[in-house]
Length: 200
Image 1 (spheres, rainbow, N blue to C red):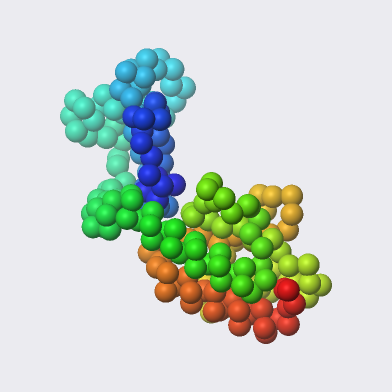
Image 2: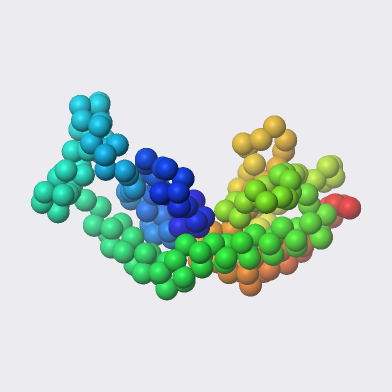
């Protein structure tokens, strides 16, 4: 969630923050990046069990020559630079966080109005990266049909296979905005009507 959730590395006394070049940064996949406390990183000398995962060696090489030890994913790095420029233009993490929160609010309120229930309690810890909704009890509910109908209209959701209840998930990140979130809600409303689901 780096790029979409404010994280005060110093205040939280974080030694390592690992993330990827995509997700909330909105770049493309291709590499991982790590924000590390240098003193902690230097303590790891000799710990690596593989050449390509020797973080200390990689850092030392970059410090010495400015070069990667292996062939770098140039296209991903260039896309990451562009993504960071866009993140900065949006008001850095705080600005992007507000947009993601607005997306989540539109989706959550819209789906609750339709009769769907969030899997998690809506409290101060309620997230805005990905939302999970409980599958309806209506016998007509068919996730695969629901998924396919949304996909045919240009919207992709996720099955909720991480819980003990049948559910589905909706991401709020990427270059989407509250108007896009509202369009999704409207599409879900139409899909629910087409499937003949009773949610209330």
